[in-house]
Figure (cartoon, helix red, strand yellow):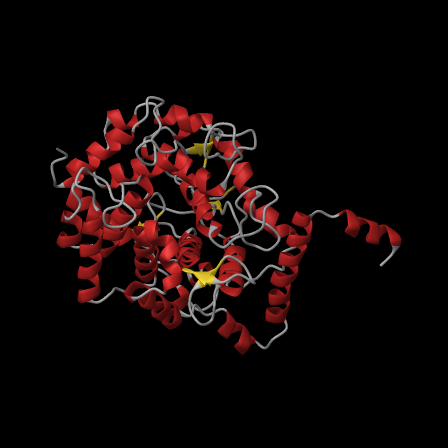
Amino acid sequence: MDSAESSNQRRATVTQHEQWMVQDQVFQIYDIFANIPTKAQNLMLELQRDSHIEYLNKGLMQLSSSFVVLDANRPWLCYWILHSIALLGESIDYELENNAIDFLKHCQDPNGGYGGGPGQMPHLATTYAAVNSLITLGGRRALSSINREKLYAFLRRMKDSSGAFRMHDAGEIDVRACYTAISVASILNILDDELIEDVGNYILSCQTYEGGIAGEPGSEAHGGYTFCGLAAMILINEANRLDLAGLLDWVVFRQGVECGFQGRTNKLVDGCYSFWQGSVFALLQRLHSVNGKRVAFSDAEGDCATDSTSEGELTDGNSSETDETCHMKQGGHGEMEPLFHSIALQQYIILCSQEQGGGFRDKPGKAKDYYHTCYCLSGLSVCQYSWSKDENSPPLPKAVLGPYSNLLEPVHPLHNVVLKQYHEAHEFFSSQSTS
């Protein structure tokens, strides 16, 4: 090492050192993959379905005492696990299903909304998790257990004079609260003008100079809040008020050399942003236009963009193709090339986030957990279906990295529930009175 390089190393920040360490870990995995026989490569690219199902079912039946710190997040644990199982195309047995429904009933507050556990105060985040869990379980017993009249009253109580929502009584006001309230109201068919009033103004005030959306005015743009803000604006039909071109520019550059997504500028890659950032592209592709140019279509359940990367093609993390394919390109016949490198993202999820013994993690060196399992699988599904022309046409083999058996169930990108479960809930609640 020469003196100049040594001097640069001494001046490097902690963040830079962490970034270099992650890159080294990720590129070691990619180097191993690139230098092993084809048969071994195929094994590395397999989604370990049986191991994931075993890991998830075990968590649904019994959690260790270490999970006591998540006592106020029990509906979230239900959602992360149930949604992951549904994405894998599996279901739980009758007894577990009934136990889950009964448990979530006990989390429902008598005055509306769901708490983090039985007897806990209702909270918009756990309300979203509980509702999505029940929709994922599906069936009349699960869906009819939701007291929509009381839940609507809870949403009205959480509505702030600014137009935004509070997470709970006297709680914080942010974009996450806006999204969870609007998402729940929309999917339960109780969304009305009073809930929508001035929500768009608040979210608009949270879009930053970078183009992404912050949790509250004056804060830093963040992947999770950007998803929440964009999804909420689409649900209230005000997405075109956002600077969509700026938003697209911001999210495009969150896909890094590791092939996964970071949540904020100059932060480390994290598997959960496979959904939070990846789904933003799925939503943008469903809008009429970005900066006056037609992007795709407006139906949130319809067509998706196509990608031209060949089956099994991997990137080394330094290819200029990543930058090129991340930018919007108009294609022929009403189609367009992808807004992000979907094969590269699948590569990161399968090779770097997947644990062979079941479950997914943030990044190499981190431990697996149910949260990252849920959002890595959700992001993987978004990748696979971002190529499909419509929801009724299965993706082409080239859209799925690894064997075609890796294909997951499609998700509704606005609510992050499996599409067929969304349709069942939509039909069920559309047939009911909103009173």
